[in-house]
Amino acid sequence: MAEVVLFHHALGLTPGVVAFADALRQAGHTVHTPDMYDGRTFATVDEGVAHAREIGFGEVLERGLRAVEGLPGDLVYGGFSLGVLPAQKLAQTTAGARGALLFHGCVPVSEFSSAWPAGVPVQVHAMDADPSFVDEGDIDAARALVDEADAGELYLYAGGRHLFSDNSLADYDADATTLLIKRVLAFLGAR
Image (cartoon, rainbow, N blue to C red; front, side, top):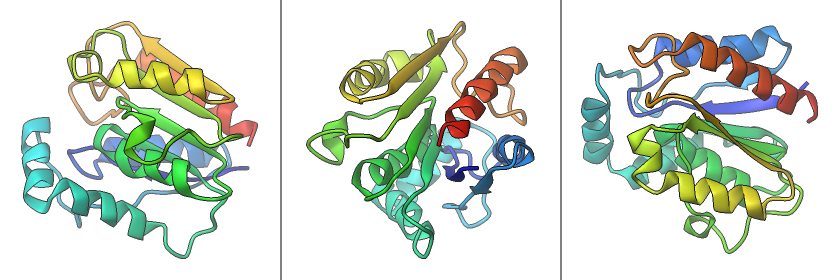
């Protein structure tokens, strides 16, 4: 079984993020869910992003990096949207990383290193008409990443919802999330 660190999105550590982690736990995986917002959650993405701005995106990233101190390096790093930042950085820069799961976001590999590390598999999941993913360049970064990775997969789901895998939000899409979790469990089963 895999050990996973799962970083929340801009709305904070919502019940939906916890439920997603619980689905992985029920399959036998160990899942850590650090809270980079110290217990605060937000009702809208705009409010959550404003809070991240107030803290500073660099500080949010640093909180994510500090959250894994003391954990083994051979982890799978996952993140939802804003949480992609620490997940992707850790997957790219931690010796022994077992993989990356990037939900609803992706940044260029060049943000954290010169190349995606050899032998570190990655999955990117998003909706094909999500304006945050498509219009802000994440889809291009995701395509480049999966082309560069030894084992990279980009899964695009039909629709325009951003945080569709969080069952506590209006954007939730049960069918897409069921398929996403099936793919994630197959990925984790191979680690």
